[in-house]
Image (cartoon, helix red, strand yellow):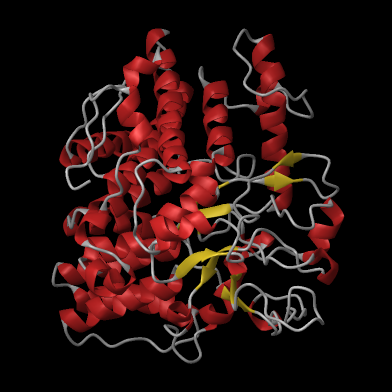
Length: 502
């Protein structure tokens, strides 16, 4: 998929010049490469939409350690990682649930999500104010509304009640609105995703890999219904995605996370990143860099910052024979296992191998393990910025469909969706016995299928399992929501009030 990605990013780089010629604002500073005006979809707010994709890719609140802290460190699957002295201040508020009201990580997380919402609102406002009702512009509006819904879904499940901003922000004080209820935020999300699903295309073709589709809108919408236990709506949307035959499971699990697996048939929504083979074009993303193996450069294993490392708890959760274990985890001192996506290399036993002493962690995230040859060619040996961030995969839709059907008393039918995921993992299928047993099976499958992908903490909360699973780590019920960043409350002079339990 790298050639497709390079074409798409050539368009992104060319767009500012082309939009300047046509009287629109430019949003990037690169000169045109190979694109022409005819290459672009030419909606009236195309430049703004491409800017939203670029912002998503470049925002730490969506792609680097602030996102990892909120989505991954709080689960029992991963921890802060790296060495003990690196980012030690992150352990208490995320690994140990000692939440902090004024913390760089969550301040950035809030601000980046609100920025994406503002960009979406500005694009929508421009289309409305210019009276642009043509089909191409409406596609662009649908992309903006998807992004707004995506951002609000993160905010509502992280903070609970948050203010809804549906119009353009002209000045900072416009952001100081009272919070809306959780139900109101979800209703706003519903409206955006219904519009997106009805308006977006099934596919943009190879010219725009990773661009939002109706399948992405339906899959995200299904997930929001799952969080509300609206099983019928969730199942109906999942069935539409499945019935479209647009998506399929990758033949190998590890293949999803290789370069060739980007924007594959299993991909529904990914944040796009690209670095050219010689490193001269960098439209990259810091997602993988945060998590690469942390070791001495001299060993050839200094692949990143080493954050978000798997736990013993996750390692022990895999069944014997589950290929996802070796595809999810790299083990210090062991082979990278070419049969599950490695490159025939052995991890060092120590930071300065062969000097005795362990690496900072026993385990590392293999899902962002970059091809050594491509690292060498780009010159980004410890900064694999070209790796996409997978957000929604077809396996997620299958497991959501299985869960929703089981909760509706249709588990005997839904078990086939669960078993598709298990079969791909090299495991035998489950037989439906009871709703309770299938519920337990689904919880297990979601954990091992999406290990260190940011799903586990929120799954535990929505299932009502967080206290029993995470209580020994310091979790209490009020930890289901993070306190709203104190700087936000201070800037707004009390218009936005703190979460009542904080």
